[in-house]
Length: 154
Image 1 (cartoon, rainbow, N blue to C red):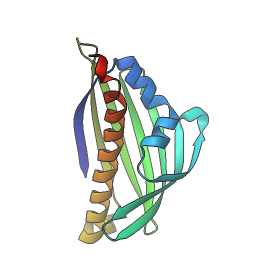
Image 2 (tube, rainbow, N blue to C red):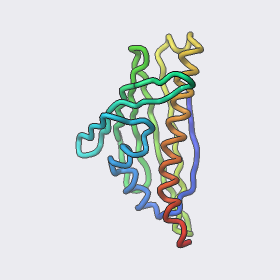
Image 3 (tube, rainbow, N blue to C red):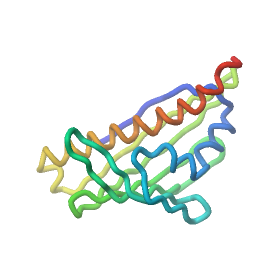
């Protein structure tokens, strides 16, 4: 299962990179994140996420880890969570391209690997799809909102 998007941010690439490297950004922008623990010098953020899917609220343990960082151009992340005692892994990447007007194009993609059981159970697969879609949308909407606050000078 893959997700990807490109967003334009009204900030220089180095500012966007610094924001994405701040573990408190992750803490602030990860939807429903609670019981936060920042470790390994900010390279790892873990805790429990709380997400409502219709009438049901799901609490999932989560760990977001920077696997590779090439400042200020790109990075790779690994996200782990557990659903119904099954581990789900997401591998993601971000790429930042500086634009001539001092804005930044942020490209991101996430590939989610699910246990075989989820492939055979459409309800579980759809739940994971909804969760990942909502999670990534809310995270990058938060990042966009942060930089749009500073867009009034342009």
